[in-house]
Length: 324
Image (cartoon, rainbow, N blue to C red; front, side, top):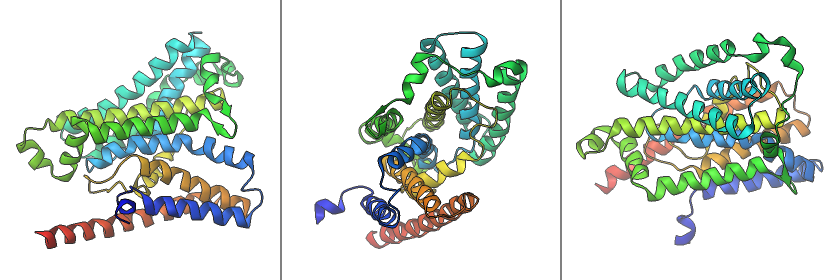
């Protein structure tokens, strides 16, 4: 029992398994290979965004710009492939570097301009979306709007091994690497310290500004990886790509146990949270629930997750006070 108690996200994993079992019982279509593949492929990018979102939230911050960074990165890929005719081995690193840089700019705005994370990333959410429209190859060259990207190195990300898409393996791999960083590096330890008490972190000699910039850069990188998955699947990109997706990423991170007050959580839970949302949304669709209810459900799940996070934070504070 003590070993079981140390397993992270065990309650969430149990909820995930029971939810899958319930929908599998209610719908024969749900348990088919094609549906499993749809869930894994359709929500892997949410998992990646939730991994990235976990880093700012662990600091007690938030990143509202991930949807716009995703769109910006996707449009850079569109322009690179279809306007300039560049090869994938050059375009892909550029789009990921641009996404990482955009995330780092968020961190710099918070550190250097002393802006609240909500305000800083709300501003860049609009700015990056506007920049996406400004560089849109679909606007500059309308004839390209119907042309597909056919670069093999990009399209290779849209393959499968049985019912498991490459996007799923990418998401799991990023989650494992990110968790190793959090668990076994000085940066990971600094992140939890800053999120737990920023003033104590400064007094202990931690470079708080550096931790913030790196965390938001990681969020941007994950948005770039999510763009890579989506562009490879759609073989194109659009200016409105990722609008509203930041809410799903935040919800998945909070469902996964990353506390909004900072200092508590991991990156495995957010991935489970992302796929749990996918299971619920697709399961309800198969049971005949209208797709118009899905945004409402996402909002309800987010509210529930925030309320649960508040209760958990209160419980942790009470436990700490009792121990003292």
